[in-house]
Each structure stands twice: as C-alpha cells, then as structure tokens.
Length: 303
Image (cartoon, rainbow, N blue to C red):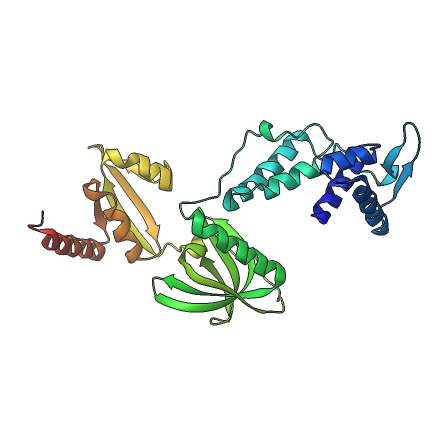
C-alpha cells in the first residue's frame, strides 16, 4: 500500500541522516522510479526532503525536521510492538506488527524476536469473532451504522447502533455506540450478536468514553455468603482474589461477595457441584434447594 510505504520511507528518513534510492527500493521491494514518485509525494505534502548526487550522495531530510531517535527508548518500542501484536492476535494477521516494523526501520533496535511480552486477545470464538471486529472497525472508520440481532437475559431484539469504540474488557469484546432504539449509549457484547450487517451512514455525535468501572456495570446489589470446600480455593483466588475469603476452623472457606442479582449467583454456585454451600441470603438458599430437588427428580432413575 502506498500510504504504508510513505510512512515507512518517512520513518527511515527521520532516523537516518542519508539513504539512497536503491536502498529504499530494495527495502520496500519496488522500483527506483516508484521511490522517486514517493519522494515527490512527500515533498508535495510539505516534508523538507532534498537529494544530493554523486559519491556519498543520497536522500536526506532537513536536520531541523528530524526527530531525536532517543524520544522512544528500546523498551518503549517493544511495549508498543507488544500492543500491536495483541491486535494481530484477534484477526490472525501481522498487519499491525508489520506497520510497527516499518516505523522502526533503520533503528537497528527493534527486532520482532526480541519481544518478551506476548498478549493474545483471541478467544474460543475467533472464527466468528474476527469477522465481526473487522466489520465493526470498518463501520466506525466510515461512520456507518451497524444492525444486528442481540441476545440478552431479557430476550432477543434487533438493534441499530452508531458504533464509536471497540472495547476489550473482562476478557470479552464489546462495541460501544449510540443505540437508536434506546436513544442512548450502550455496550454490546460481540458474542451475543448475530446477523451483523453494515447499514446507512450517520453524522458522528460527541461520544463519551464508556464507564467501565465494575461498580457501574456490575453493581453489588445482592450480597451472598458461601462456604466452599478447601479444594475450591484455586477458583476463588483466580476469580476474586486471595482476600475474597477467610478460612474457617474446619478448613472450609467463607466467601462473602456482592452480585448484581440473584440470577447470576445460582448458576455460578452450581458450577462448584458439591464443593459449595450457599448460606445467605435465606430466600436464595431456598430457591437453590428447590432447583436441586427439581433437577434430582428430572434425572432420577435415568441411566
């Protein structure tokens, strides 16, 4: 792509005092004539580039325009590359890593194999998630609405949304945008979206950043107390932290936490099988008891 090549050429010129057209042509795998046209394009864009002929000549950028290469240190460049690679993990491409390599061309400091931080943002649903991310990203850039069927605890609905941000949070991908049905900004989980299509263009409105504080998204309205078997310690540490429980004299773990509602508690408790006993609140304990009796009758006598 010409734009990426122009960025790469400019990056090299900012970091090296002089470079020849054959070197640039070999680096970007294009002809010398193409490099000459690229240099002309950069000059028309106002970049102060000049060339010198003969032995020791080459292409240079005005000294006062050159960026001090110490602005970004090697560790900082590696951190940027780690972030860009994490975006590549979503789509399965090297698009962002290649861009970073072009931007760092000529420094001699940024080698892809040197990275010691690896971030993988892909998921079990990568085959279905990546196309959604690509389509939503294009809709954001082109200011087009997106339309999709959405599945939530309240039921299924069809939404038309003006997308503004793709958000990766709580190990899940979301899109933040203006919902035309609710006439407000909403956060939609990509895994709950089907039949995604791009629709009409829209005029962008001022879009606030989403408030992703857990207290706002998952308000602790429902406080529960659970006794866990010691074997469940690893899950409590992983999901809620080592300070989320206390150890009883008999070795059991007393866990007290706030949940958004009772409906989110019971399924979670059931994932522990016989390793968890819900103590409080009483009404939720009774609901869980009724549910387990119903399940016992359903599976009674079946082989």
